[in-house]
Image 1 (spheres, rainbow, N blue to C red):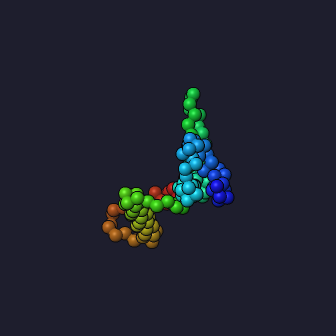
Image 2: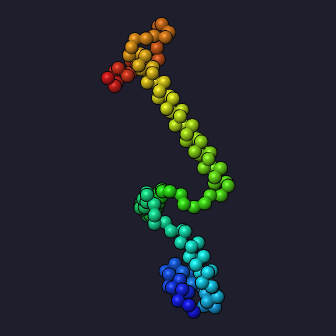
Length: 136
C-alpha cells in the first residue's frame, strides 16, 4: 500500500466507515474512491454555522431536544428546492413591501392629522386621538 492510502485510511471519518465493513470490502477501495468518499461524507459536517443553538427540554418523564442552525447555504439545491426558495423569497419581499407601505401610510396620516388637515369634514379614523392619548 502507498503512503497516501494509509494516510486516507487513518482519517477518522474514513476509518469509522471502513470499520463497519468486512475487511475484504474495506480493502477493495482505491485511494481515489476513498478520497471521494471522504469528500461526500465530510460535506455533512455540522460544525460551521453562524447560529448553532442546541438544548434539551424535560417534559414530564420525557426529554426532547431542539436544534436551530443557521448560516450560509453551501449545498447545491434541487430544482424543487430552488422553486420553493424563490417562492418564499418572493413572499418575504412582498410582505416587507406591504408592511412598509402600510407603515408609511400610517405615518403620513399622523403627520396630516398633526398639521390639522382634514380631508373629509366630520370624519376621522380616530388614529390621531389614540396616538395623542397613548404615545404623546
